[in-house]
Amino acid sequence: MTTTAGSPDWEALRTAARDAMSRAYAPYSGFPVGAAALVDDGRVVAGCNVENASYGLGLCAECGLVSQLQATGGGRLTHFICVDGRGEPLVPCGRCRQLLYEFGGPELVLETPAGLLTLAEMLPQAFGPDHLAK
Ligand SMILES: O=c1ccn([C@H]2C[C@H](O)[C@@H](CO)O2)c(=O)[nH]1
Ligand SMILES: [Zn+2]
Image (cartoon, rainbow, N blue to C red; front, side):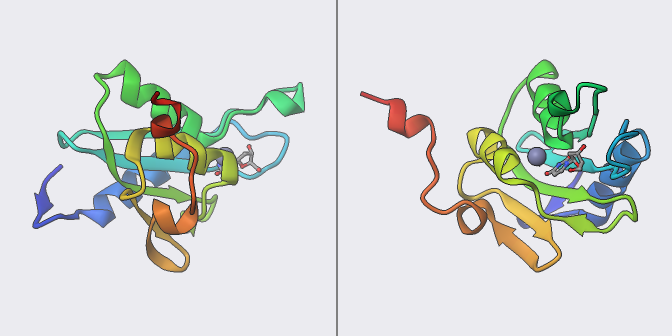
């Protein structure tokens, strides 16, 4: 994916998130979610929520996304979007903000219903890898 002067192709990311959402497995909540992100090497990674008959074991879309990130070569997330079943932007849940922080840090840019926000704005005073450094 091409990026012009730090601004990514949000439409392409939105399309990737909607595509993933269309393959969500959400028979229990009836709330499909798709997530997509741009990686600093130009890759796009995506994920969808995958629920389970044992309800508490359900996986958010962002879990699949970070798994794909790592399984396809790692890297840093720079831009992120998740969408609901109508394909409209959604805010990631609190646990997923923490998952994203690990691989994007405070500067990750998210498209949300409130516009573009940084992860620092969505997860202030975040706990992260630096806190483990001696
Ligand atoms: O950030 C979020 C928030 C919710 N969901 C999923 C979990 C569950 O399957 C459904 C309803 O909460 O939406 C995600 O995938 N990501
Ligand atoms: Zn979540």
